Image (cartoon, rainbow, N blue to C red):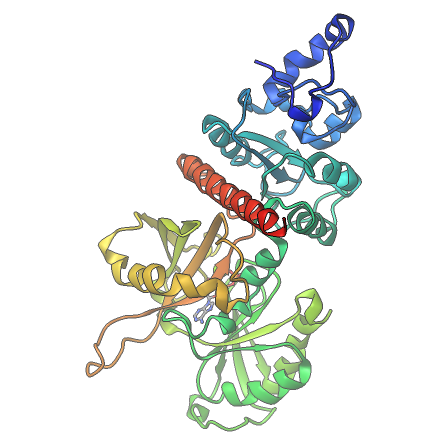
Length: 444
Ligand SMILES: Nc1ncnc2c1ncn2[C@@H]1O[C@H](COP(=O)(O)OP(=O)(O)O)[C@@H](O)[C@H]1O
Ligand SMILES: [Mg+2]
């Protein structure tokens, strides 16, 4: 059923106009028009009804081909799901990630209108116009990658504008994506029970050069660049001459180092001075562009694997144990690691889950300076076993966080989770709506 939006109350639809737009309305009802668009505006409150053919193509592509369900006639709310054309995360011939349309369809099944929208720099203004009225929230499903007509800073600006200027529920806010996913989050969350205290962040060459020659004297380190993924620019650094360990003073620049890059376990040798210079490349571009180096104690029990916990908001939904191949540290499939999936309540990980979910989670965003934000819709935390505590403490194993990620965590092989994602997205959007009403009421 088509109902007229309240701001169209004075508008009367003549029979002639009705005839003219009948064809449009049939397809619009599929894609979310819930009213006749009197102004020819390409705005979400009209579904796709007011958009020209070119605008439709730019924003939505061929919606019919993607398998999007019929939108509810009277939606309980509206969510836009952003994607970007191209990139490595799509199947050939399909413009959307494999999990985007299922997420939209799960929202639709719950009575919400959900529209997949392609971001491109050319569409920036149009998207602001389209999404700035009547939309409750956005979900970003854009993997950090290279796309045509796509500038990451512009995309982030768009997300920030929709959240900050137009009040959309941000899933997630660009600031949260950047702070949560940045490697220096590990230094900020070091006070958590599952945080690794021996973690430092360097933002400038001077501090890096001043501190690292001492930290490396105390034991093997992991030096992490902020950019890259899958172990690229993540170096496990050991001294070639183990007798120099634990000197706790600045080592000579000529000290020989053994370096293993986690991307593929390959080993290189450099002198300390050379490595200091080599790693400075990761500080290029400045802190404002995300350049930073993390210096963290090496946890030798990485050989027993890395434990990835997948979350939807505050709910853990899956545990993946990634075991590097014999003798390696890399947990990527490419490097030969083996993966085993567990339910989130599997007793094997009960203590880790208790520490992290019940004790740490409430402090996670405050430590990152993001206490006003909801936890990301979909995110992961990776844990590595630390050395067992001595018997006089409790003799037990403890896990420490090695990485957080919320930039477009994929669930393409776990599509059964899309309904939980939809429930959480609705919860976040409704909470945002309540807050907006409360703010507006307080201004009266
Ligand atoms: N503190 C550490 N101790 C031991 N191994 C580590 C440590 N930090 C990272 N690694 C190894 O390096 C890999 C890549 O590091 P990670 O921080 O996860 O970066 P990326 O973003 O590249 O995945 C991890 O999967 C793990 O095998
Ligand atoms: Mg990792």
